[in-house]
Length: 358
Image (cartoon, one colour):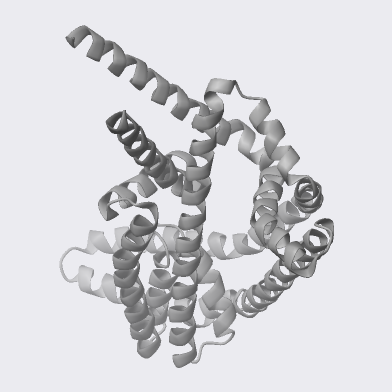
């Protein structure tokens, strides 16, 4: 009996290890080139039921509502992305040219004065320390000058990267849109073909796995969209109260950065508060710091609970899986690991229910 249990355990462990390895290999090597078609399939899946219901209610051919819903969907996405891009670009155009002015007019004099006062204080104890502080100051100023002058070079490189990658982005968008319509028009045939590629004894298991995985992905996507909108609302209100120019654009940009755990808004708000304090704008520094603390508390309370409830996981398990996934596979691991963990527990629960029924 013990030998049979060990064999069963080894077989189960090998099965799940192989399944996880295949998923990770797919994410690593195939997800990027197949992403336009995967996105096209997801959009087609989202539009399939509404189009079918609309066709039955209006007594139209199924292809007409599919075509119309597809156009409305992508038009809405295009307008939304365009509005967001305009806001973010306007905010960056306002902020980036001010960096050299702030550096030479406020930040540099403050740092020089701080080092001079430090030299005066150190001279009372040991004159040799003054030389060390002076050398440190020169190196620090040289580093800052290189950093500020390198911003323009970095901006040019960034624009070059965007321009170079633009054809691939446009091609991916076109492939996504075209594949959406092709898959939507023959959705049942495409799903049937994919099922027929699998062995008969695996079709039920794979179908249940895909259904559970898609459901989990939809839930976690809805959760993160809710978190992003919540962060965007908090940032917009905070920036508007502080009378920051292009408050909505900055709020949108920081809300997108906030989707990353651990760093989140701190990547922007912490340096912002420090620089504002150095420049003597203490009300701005206090407001930004307070906004960061509020967002940090709300984010750490809401995110694990919201994502965990949607995924059926404990908040701690959700937080650990998100962090481990982010460290190993970046943004894909951030979303993928909670889905894989939720999928594992749901399949395990389903198998246990089947065995109990037998």
